[in-house]
Amino acid sequence: MFGWSVSVPQSGIDWNKFIGYIGQMQEHKYSIKEWSKDDRPREKLLSTGAENLSNSELLAILIHNGTRQKSAVDVAKEVMKLGKDSLSALGKLSIKELMKIKGIGEAKAITIVAALELGRRRQAGEIMHKPIVSSSNDIADFLQAKLKDYRHEVFAVLFLNRANKINHFEVISEGGITGTVADPRIILRKALEEDAVNIILCHNHPSGSLKPSKADEQLTQKIKQAALFLDITVLDHLIVSEDGYYSFADEGIL
Image (cartoon, rainbow, N blue to C red; front, side, top):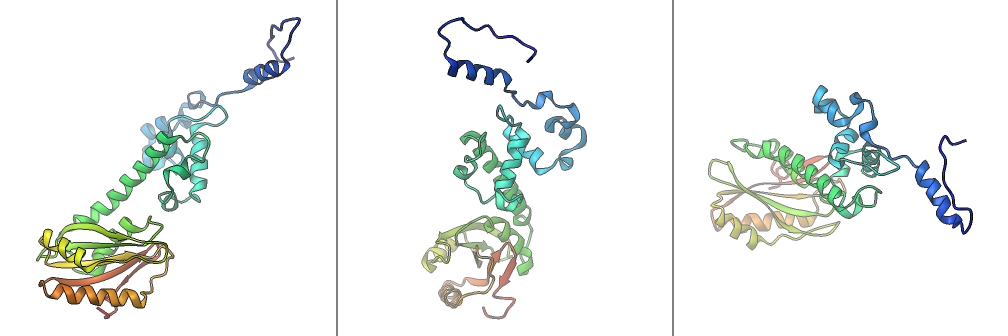
């Protein structure tokens, strides 16, 4: 009936083992090698270019292989689903969260996280090397790329030289879901170490709101006044989220 035969001892049959054996023989291991060559992600990338692959297919290349029940692409689709079919949301997932998916072990989760971080750095790096910062627009995209995947608030600073070229970027402090605290002394000490003449303050709002709080305004003024004693100018304070940014300088409250 099944197209194959099984030799079974006439006595002393362990039926649990026998049924398990039958199941193993019926089980089919999904392998991308069995697919049509045009449907294999690696071959498809070589023949048509990376831009023609779906997010799941690109992830499948990183994942490399699937499980007995699922191909690498099937596993990749589950990864995308966990990330709400959004690379932005996927970038917020931790290694442990990715490992909840069957077929994603620690090594594969690390590979995915590393790839997403490279993409983030590429996006930020292109803006980072812009010759001169002259407006909030020049730096907002960079800051969004650097901070958008944090689930908690972080406070960061851009350190610029006299020509407003970026010398250094650093996350100064990390807080909770609703706030973080930045120490002006740490910021100004770092500014002196980086030979910064101007600085741009920044923090993210994971909630998506771009409205500054009273505490945000007070902290900005505190850092601004302290910086003046060292001949350092606070050019702006930006609040960023996935929805955009808010510039203290543009709003005239700096």
